[in-house]
Amino acid sequence: MADLKERIAKRCAKHFVDGDFINLGIGLPTMVADYLPEDVIITCHSENGFAGIDILADQDTLDVNIINSGGQYVTALPRAKFFDTAESFGLVRGGHVKATVLGAMEVAENGDLANWIVPGKKVAGMGGAMDLCVGCPEVIITMLHTQKGAHKIKKECTLPLTAEKCVTDIITEMAVMKVTDEGIVVTELHPDYTKEEVQEATGVDLIWSPDLKPYDET
Amino acid sequence: MFNKIVSADEAVAGVQDGMTIMVGGFLGTGSPEVLMDALVRKGVKHLTVIGNDGGLAEGQPAGEFAGKTPRGIGKLLENHMVDHVIMSHVGVNPRLNEQFADGTLTYTLVPQGTLAEKIRAAAYGLGGVLTPVGLGTPMETNLDELGREKEVMEIDGKKYLFERPLHADYSFIRASMADEFGNYMCSKATRNFNIVMAGASDHTVIAAEKLVPVGTENPDIWQVAGVLVESIVEGEPAWQI
Image 1: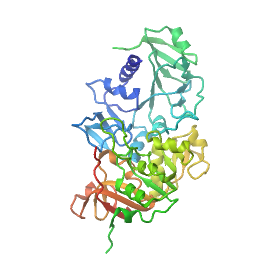
Image 2: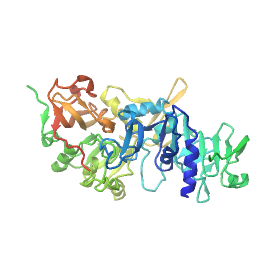
Image 3: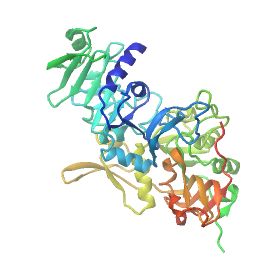
Image 4: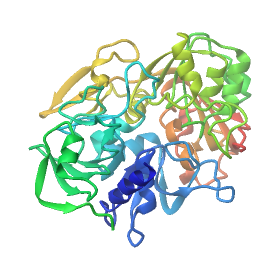
């Protein structure tokens, strides 16, 4: 399982290019930072208050005034810019944060996303997820393809939505997919799986790209 | 001559049972601890509290940097002083879900960016804000914090949710440094809601880590105008791990 998550995080990191300003969510998305290419400048947004997250702080680098959006003490890059919540989410809603990487409970064929609440369970709240999904031009979902075999990519979401028609890309351990007006298009297939197995694990009819490539694990 | 500098107990003396307060901080970072401690001493009850989250409980965050006491709004929750919270995130401090479960606390969830804009609208004289955030979600269908229905408006062919201003009786803010007139700045990631909450309430109170005489600092450093600040409390300690 850890290996599969690492595979997803590594593949997601390849999505980004020099100069990108992005937001990585909590959990698997945070792991993406470990695999970002080193010869480029990519700036990570921490929605609680700055652009330019570096790494987790230790006893020597601890600054009690710098946390990430998960509440962990982190360090800031020399190019970091600190801001208040209004400015932070102005950057988000204004479309200036190019991409957000998040997990999902359900993704629908049209890009609807549900990832913040399960009625009747402990309440966490949406935090900044709704703002990020509406504001960021690219919403990239990184997740295991199914929930222990149950479909997470579905015709329609059954859980309350985080945002409508927002997901642009889905990266799982099985495949890399794009959400299009025609439906969900598979662009890369992992060699451990057949097309049939991926289709079986998905609740919508997948469209296979004419340019289907092997999953980029380099 | 007027003097804004008061003790923490004097600063919270006007807070009554049932009032609405807003408190800066993000998971405890940037929360005004001396003001929370003073509210606990005063023992005020049935508050409605506006903030990003419920602060931290004792021992959070887990690991080597765990706190020895609750932080921020966590102190009010620990002492069962709150009836309703208006927040973007309620999943970290376990006191929140415990008190939701036992029926002593209710909540209204607001997306983080929308929460900041609702507060800013109250501070800066706007009738509300139009945002695309929340369309097609429970934010559109749920009632707002005062039980009012949400409105969807179409402007130039694009849909928006209309969000009303969010006003309180008191704003409690942490400043890293302030001058004796109330001009202040918040260091690094402590800014969060400590900027927009100034002026969004009838009374704005800041707790300053460092207080300097007027005119001793380069005025370019101040992030918020002292004219918004009614009371200044000195001696907010830097957070100790």
